[in-house]
Length: 176
Image 1 (cartoon, rainbow, N blue to C red):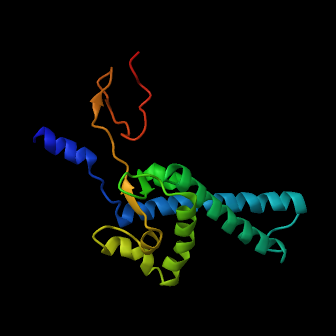
Image 2 (image 1 turned 180 degrees about the horizontal axis):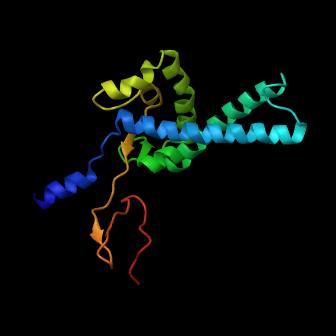
Image 3 (image 1 turned 90 degrees about the vertical axis):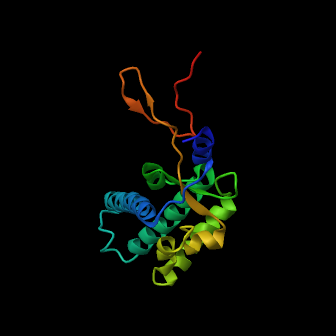
């Protein structure tokens, strides 16, 4: 393996596949479910009723969840290029050749486009498994794609343990 091969391998981006994206989505849905359950428990404490029993609270719960999901996805994608689920799995949303996170407007368009992916009976999501570039329908609409976060080569730490640090983020160990 030549130095050129190593450098090309470090510079190339690798599209995140369907199953990595599905795992990240499942983690994000778990976070949204936790937030929704917390809101339901809070409403029970404040109004002394179950959300399911009160015909006015259930729509408020779903509206809150929808708004929270929009803010969660849009803001985190715009600021960091990834939600908590994507960060755990090691993938991010990018726009352009430089791998920059999407702008707020593009992130909002991507969120709204999730509903288009759902409206196709889920085929918009399945496209990520079928396409060579691993882009789903909402990626095509928003002009984004999801890639794996590049990692620096493993180095031996002081105790001989192998340590990996993301290339795009500082490792926290600098020399002074």
